[in-house]
Length: 416
Image (cartoon, rainbow, N blue to C red; front, side):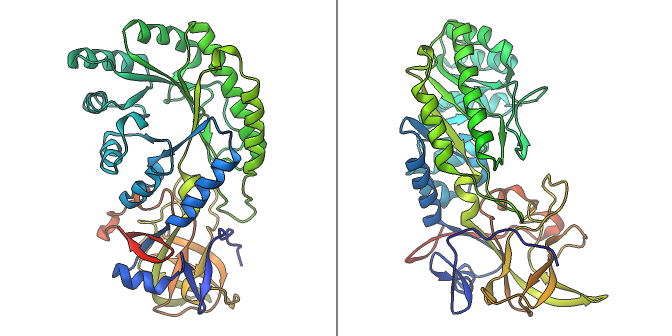
């Protein structure tokens, strides 16, 4: 029997059934009208943001990385709680603006920006985090044709990454950002061209669970930002320190110690060099804000046995939860936290695999886990589904289509 990942805090049972924000899973499915279904708990998102505010230095801004989950009701909820949004495409810009986010609170990061995206961002007043010298020249030329001063920042490819991070976004050869040694000259070029200079974006990695490693990379980021500003002999209005805060997905994973990260950063802020004394700092987080607040619900359509193994075949699968299936960059497949939602809290009675409805052996949501005996009609729950789920999975694979999504909070059945 293989272990399951840790179920996040904040979920309970009502009448032997999983409850999300005080609503039974079956009631949420009935409200949505069908399975599969993503449910996002707005109260858990609010609590996570509040905890960050308490733990982090007061001068540190908090941005939401929209790529983690772009569900419109969720964006509207988060918009009132954070200081900014980080986007990675023109499409995400449309979503952020539609959610009521002011353009001045949006920054646009990502390689390969097309001229149409650059034009739309400059017209709207969104900050462009430039990924190359070529992109910088395109942005300046487009802004000149529009007769406006573009809001420009530089994404730096640092010469370090976060130890143990799930995805390394900096250090060595990368398609992201501009190598640090070329940044001072580009800063001078942008300022001399008359842009609205916005500062630096330095992102070293993501999905890190080592609190000391996160603090160390933040310290390195501050040192790098100071060095680049001094070399350019230019004030640094803003500096995005990146993110990287991870959440536990797999057996043995433990949460980061938020207070330790905050205390270390507070100390670093107290020792800032003069060149950074007036700089406004922020971090951008996506998965950490919303990942543990989401649950994916699917219905068992068949209980099947083959060569002594039990398979719980659901109407969902990897086309909605690619990461839980182990096909989103995982080298060795491990089980996400999962449960039988309609028998929540019951002790394990058998070893079973939860699989999807696709005709591929890759379509597994839980492999040989310990579950209470489940039957056709029961609901299964896959936790940590609030980030990189619905929008990061191949929903059109084999023509099954997307899952429904709802946002819920205590006292409100469904939103969106």
